[in-house]
Amino acid sequence: MFEDPFLRKFEFAGNLSEDERTALQLLTLTRRPVPARRDIAESETGDRVYLVMSGFACRYKTLSGGNRRIVSFVLPGDLCYMHDSGAFARDLRVGTLTQCSVVDIPRARLEELIGLHPGISRAIWWVTLRELSRAREWIVNDTRPADRRLAHILCELFVCLRGIGMADEHGFDLPVSQTDLADALGISAVHINRVVQALRTRGRISWSNDRVTIPDVQGLKAFAEFDPAYLCLDGFGP
Amino acid sequence: MFEDPFLRKFEFAGNLSEDERTALQLLTLTRRPVPARRDIAESETGDRVYLVMSGFACRYKTLSGGNRRIVSFVLPGDLCYMHDSGAFARDLRVGTLTQCSVVDIPRARLEELIGLHPGISRAIWWVTLRELSRAREWIVNDTRPADRRLAHILCELFVCLRGIGMADEHGFDLPVSQTDLADALGISAVHINRVVQALRTRGRISWSNDRVTIPDVQGLKAFAEFDPAYLCLDGFGP
DNA sequence: CGTTCAATTGAATAATCTCAATAGCCGTGG
DNA sequence: CCACGGCTATTGAGATTATTCAATTGAACG
Image 1 (tube, each protein chain N blue to C red):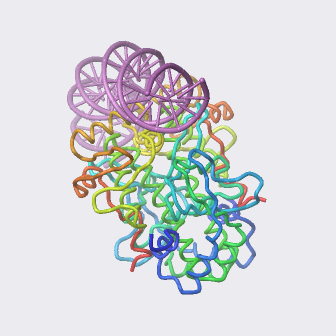
Image 2 (image 1 turned 180 degrees about the vertical axis):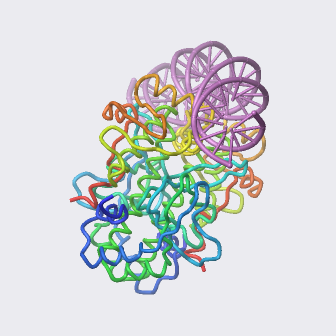
């Protein structure tokens, strides 16, 4: 990738100054590999936020029955635990789905940058509002039947991955299991399989070897009632 | 009520100075009544946020089939459209469920206060993170069976209403229709009725004449797996 | 080759939806 | 006072959707 997915994502909130870009890049020098299926937060390391530089991860909660519900995907360039410190959402965890490369950032350091750089402050605010908008869209999505719900999530992944240069015109790599998708949809592993097959049979998607192909992107978006407005890719608007 | 639900809610984020309290109270002098089942946003009135001072409202989106999905309730003291300006969530509306009393606030005026008063700025940030935390909990809730899901929402309403002095030890007024609840749960009107009856039959709740009574609050919370941590009522934590 | 995990299939059960239809309440207009 | 319409709650029945349990298949790995 020609540059940080991190910077690339932040620029959606508006242009950053050269100072700000440099300050952000200085944060990302030391990276830590995290294997698949692990929690990103290390124990006993104090109050930190985590920046995912590569790989797929997710925010999730575990229900009392042992079920996992994924509430959002974490893609390269996403900050984690930024909104969940202290009293907020003690039970919300961030776990990897594939191997990831992660930057550990002391929260105080990030807050310092926020205080110093208006562009960074604005970007953090934008990221937060975007997460809120995204979460609400997921709630709405949960009222759709499972096939449209899956289609919607695939559209979201497609658009988000395109935004960071990780998808081409017709598809993207999706190195996660059907079970992971099931947990993101809130349905069972058996059912997601049947839903995937239904979308395949009708030619809406193909998915093999960790590669999702969407022959007719507009068609899938229409099927899913997907409107990318909630992803706020136009920044704060006019 | 002995004071604004607005101020009362803001104080959860931390204490406000006397100046800040006064500034906020000055915002709420002129109120506008909104009948039930109307959208709160007026047309053509410029960029505003809306503060609900009394009544029940909701944030919702409408699906292409005409279904409404409520993504959160709006209770007295809640700000609306604060996070949804411009490019964000064009399709997210705020509508009243009962008659409401609403304060129209020019967005610029609120932003001015945010710039001037650190306590207000912190409160706005807290409200935002709380909405995010709440939305994610609703996603998780959508994976529960309908009876537990309803129980969870009732617990949330109970705790939130208690926080603003609108619930007593064992229940609260809930002047909304079963259909409204159904739209908040993402289930049909027929099904919510059966779920309500199931909870009634098992003695978990009683609900008549717009009044919900919970004989065993702890029991209902356990049934719903309800943990109030996500509501961040302890402010920003230690 | 055995192990393991992901994907797949079948079959029975449970949850939820849709389509009707009925009953109760409340306010309006006569 | 009473009939009417409109909205909410309720009930029944059949069709769909999704779940669970169990078993099978396939690919990857050592």
